[in-house]
Length: 89
Image (tube, rainbow, N blue to C red):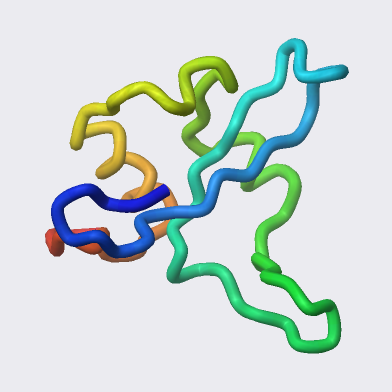
């Protein structure tokens, strides 16, 4: 997801659970906590399943709808990182 004012990558959207897309929640994860792994040729994140299950989430069908800044702030606060627009983690 891209932060619309700055054009910076705001967060990655991870999904797990559900079956064939039914009952699936997506979890926004701040881009800054992802690390690129050259051996895997992809990004990894150091989170436990429990941390991800307890993280802020939203239904897959609402992932492309506008969100309030307060929801984005909750995501960054949960992971303890600064959002791209500044503020307190």
